[in-house]
Length: 211
Image 1 (cartoon, rainbow, N blue to C red):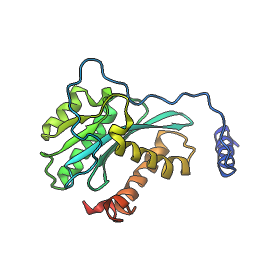
Image 2: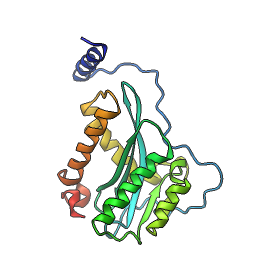
Image 3: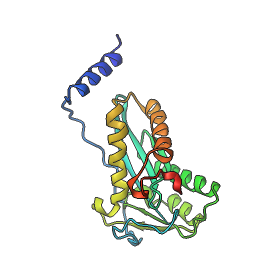
Image 4: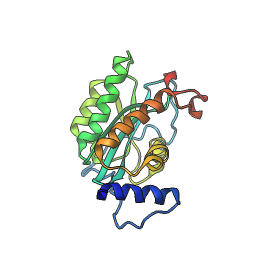
């Protein structure tokens, strides 16, 4: 039996027994505040409601531990429908991770005929979201950027709540993970289930296909 197979077996047995090993690894920081002034306003003020689809998106980044190192996941969530409109995984925390998730969101919604001209995009003050390319992508569809205050997770609570749900329903229940490849397949399957079959209280016990 290989080392990896042994490690997976031990991890599975420990999980079934309700045990968890002690780790000295520090959780990575996914929000590194950008240098310089940030004049973007907080247009949400913790009121995560929207009158229709594509009026308010929230975005955030989280991390997953695998046997081959940390993997980072960026998500873009539509507040009205609770639908994940964009997502991306990466082995690093560069700005391209957030940009790729946003590009997916823009492409999928415009392909469905959505008008994004009234869209507010809300995030934390991480450097990934203040990059020139990210700002340009929002500008191309006439979307308006909104940010919460520094260091306050409540200002982006809906995105944080999805990250917690994602980790509970997929990462912890089906882990441990070997690396980026197997995780990417699992996340794609999870998002498909989450968007099309999982029932959500936030949309009246319907699936995110309502919008």
